[in-house]
Image 1: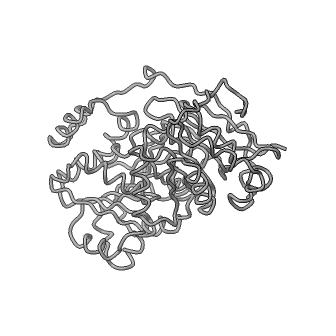
Image 2: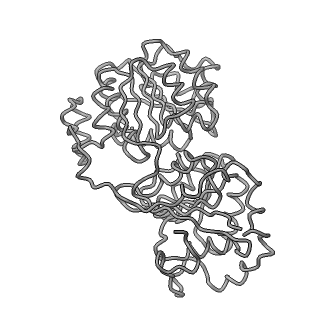
Image 3: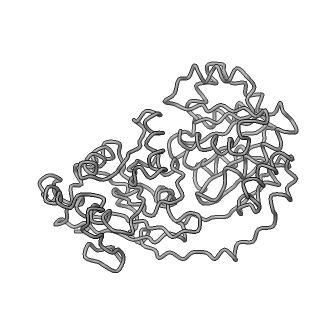
Length: 421
């Protein structure tokens, strides 16, 4: 069930009108195989890697089977939780009546002060699942504070944005985002006041602890959002260091899309009689059509990619490469052929990353190219296609990548380039 460049059943060709997203007259310039090298130009786009070859191709092929909404049973409305009046009013004004399943099953336990393991797929409302009960908790106890750890700068900023949507920068709720790529002294100054929420990446947070800018005894709650991804990114030592400094009675909320290996060990070590809210397994989204794009020795990989991008059905695209160099090379190639494209990776300054994301969200650019940092750092609801231009290293990476599409009940596409002899 592989995508074929000659197939017309899955994608209809774009017209040759001037509305095409790139100038068809330029195709002769990218048709030369010598420019990209053998095997579809793979050498140009990153180093040779052995990890992804171990993944079974069947992982990348699956027909979408959306779960009917009627099968999801919601036991509460937001009004049932007894939130502080101003929180309930904010939810009502936003037309938010019914919680998502992860919110429905975890909010009450968090309000009761219990430790939580929340396992749910991306895009299921995990952020509000912990923000709403914590806001209620801090309304009743203004001196309480929480630290929220996130794997990427983008996710940390998105969490603060969600917080501001509820508080509207009022109600006496203060927060500080502590992430790399931004001046640390400005963050230290903001930390000199009382913050109900400190939202941080693990490395920067540990740095601030070492600079004596963080009082670990002040936290009543710690949230580890996307904990599995933080461990994948090598933050295990920082997270252990942070957790060991917290008071023993600190409420701990672990949210993740997957649990295995180090994630499970961490939970067993630090959580006390946790409530488990398990709404997903280690599987990819049922709302995503998944298929492979076979790349033979006679194929030019760049040509195959641009043929896909030139289909009418491809409206908004997230493309994954493994390395930062590969991202920038592909970004330049697509930009030279007239595509509205942006890129995101760890070497970009925080300002450039935020500008790129804003353009992508606002449809000023309809293609975003990134490393795996983007799989947890982009919260855009209308991505129609995820393209794995380079293979993911693990099944978990694949799941997180394709979780960027097929959200909000929509059907998405995930296409993975696979070399064939």
